[in-house]
Length: 404
Image (cartoon, rainbow, N blue to C red; front, side, top):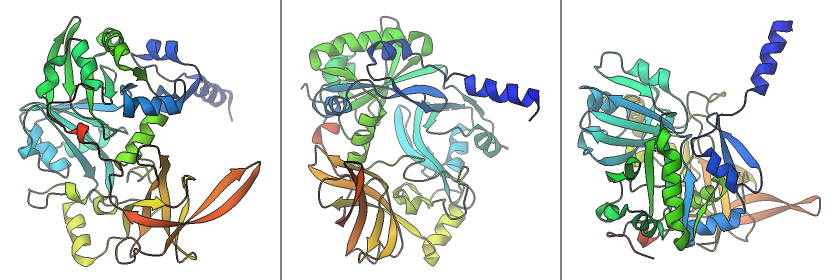
């Protein structure tokens, strides 16, 4: 290795992670120094105690920094037509002022990523997702009159989730969201400028997501954080949010499926039908990326995998466990698992190889290795396929939202 190469490698290692616009407030609350890399940003696994942060989601209210979520602004006279070609759902049916959960595929019908599509105006959209896809988005835009640019750094986002989320917004002077239904958007004035608020979230609970220009981020945090103190508001990290999303049965790129553009080995990609996203596919709309391959796989029975919810006996989470049929034949792998404090069940998401999970659904077992005093104990626990979500809370969709 030459001196130049060594210096470049050293510089790469020493390059710090980016800090979100809310980082000064997160750092002030941090007690455990447990940070991870989220799309190049410094993000907390936890700020204090994960158990307390989880129960803030379910019992009071929680505040989570969404800013590292990748955000693309897509606008122009062909924006709707372009997104209809790109994504699985029919964008022409999406009304202005709404959010649509969606996904997009390569030409082979393999999922690249999933995310949320905000229709801010008739010809203005914001696409939010886990990973960066600008080259793919630009290549897909050839022939369309549309402008696409990343605005991750420009837009700061907060997720306010939990039963007292609406009460917190009302105390902050943003109570006009009372009429906002799930997956609707509104823009409200605040002392520092406008706040875009959507009734969305990743927790299966009452919740909202708030977006402002990055220069107004700290003012937004201070407004919401101060208003929420009377309602048990707590800032949280990803570990608590992850527990809630598993209870909701939501999937995460990089955990429950691998994006087709980053999968290293053949056969690791997944079609929408193989990760529970078959309901997103609208075969009646005009051509979209992957349409021919997806419909062909359905017709010919070529689908190889299925994502299922499992309830597992006992109370030891089965994270990463192998799933067996009849205790001996491998059927798949657990992609996410927790003991659910709300459902009071040992739950998991698992990717199974068909016909397991479709034609063969009985006599399933998971192999769990539990660390007991510096020694791993192997346990074979019975698993039963159950519907998702594992937790369903009426307050999530109640309109108007409750004042808890």
